[in-house]
Length: 329
Image (cartoon, rainbow, N blue to C red):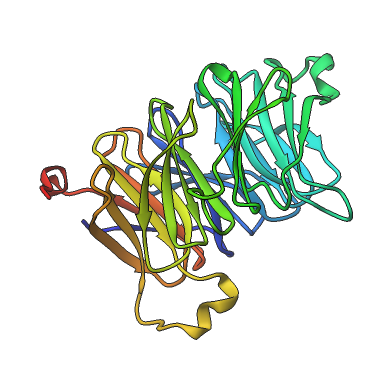
């Protein structure tokens, strides 16, 4: 399994996302320019220029025509994927962190950071079908949810767009009603994470999701009941999680915080993406290579390749060898 090294960012990676067909890979980094690559050979297709700060996350519409990005420049932008032109900008009073299209791509959930006395918030926005539609141009929030302390690192849609699942610095996972904004469920403090949650990734069918945390563990949760299903324990803080849509594999990526990196053994590409058996929670292997903590992971929807993005500014694209599909524990 020879990785394809994709160098297009000058700063650390923050987020990776495949489109639904699995032929395009979108990467976000702290260098202001989200980038799109061919997912099979790692060739760079283009960049989306217009943001004025680090880009924290992105999402791509079902038909791969629209890209949404959330940035530290206090905006979230909608882009035309093909031409790279920004179609619309949502302006906030604090940095936009997490973005996620609902099923149907007509609404999106965007989280904003605590900033200058403002608390963090989860915004639900309408997305216009046609960028010239003046009504949606106002960009008013349909609903704003507040409550969680600290940053909300990730917010995603639950089944049928009825709920929103959020997780972040206050270690709790919350499920909100997306119509009324009511808080429906909160994860149990005892069995939940003990330190900030850095990442959240849904299973292909949306029935369960995975969270990664600085407490050196990842946890698997039932989407509807918010019941804890499994816990995966590692040696270092987890910055990114993803799971295979094909096999029962969970991938965790991490390393220290960027500020603590100098205190550790920094031999050639020491930072690895670790594979765990989803059911048995045992480690099955790892993919080394990054020269800094892994900040982003994404699985191709066909389950035959995955990508990792690091603090080192590289995206590494791994196409699995045939023997990966026959791993027996």
